[in-house]
Length: 176
Image (cartoon, rainbow, N blue to C red; front, top):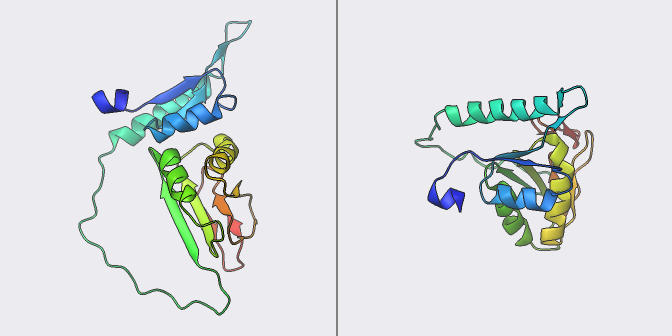
């Protein structure tokens, strides 16, 4: 309702992101940008957990403070030659609203897809395993958070799981 009536940057603050993963990813599917656990006031009065909340607020400030760049035109380079026996690669990138869109796209993929699927979703690395599990539950596909040096597997949905870039090397493994 918020995004329909007055769109704005939304940070979900909840008692436990991990414990409410499905609701968090649903909120992100509707446009929430990120989620964080609620900071707790310790016995000494120190707000434990305040640093992650403040860091996420600062990050969202940087994200929404930057004007969006729109590409005017682009050309698609010719497809590279594919070695015999090589699997096609499907790369999907998502940000705001991504979990819901990813569930819809991945759910529509054939179960016997003979391709490697790599997904990069703008989500904090601590939430990536939960997102992989949520996507698997929503779509019925094999979705796994990528660990460094994992090798691509046809039919599996590979989800980037760090805050860094994902690289598929010539040695055919994932690196960050």
